[in-house]
Length: 126
Image (tube, rainbow, N blue to C red):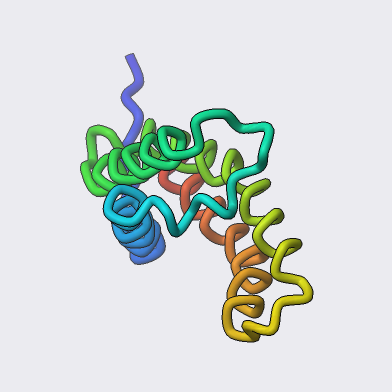
């Protein structure tokens, strides 16, 4: 029987866990921050925001623990892909905003999700 080696806890995986932890807390403490990002077709905005915050915290914890790192890596990649449409919507909504910093951050986060997804997959594959 072959056993799979536990993926190492690299700096990028630690960083991803940290990002998920901070974002997850914000989702739970200030869900109204994320409400403008929610597409109209998604029902129960507040509940979805809170649930995604809980998922981010679960992924963060899972990435840090060797026994759950593989599953948490796949879950993290899936979560990042699932929320990408909301990030696209935010960037689109802010396209003509006078809030330059917020607009810049919204567009900058789009390509930044690629290395985050890469780190999640690295955690999953080892």
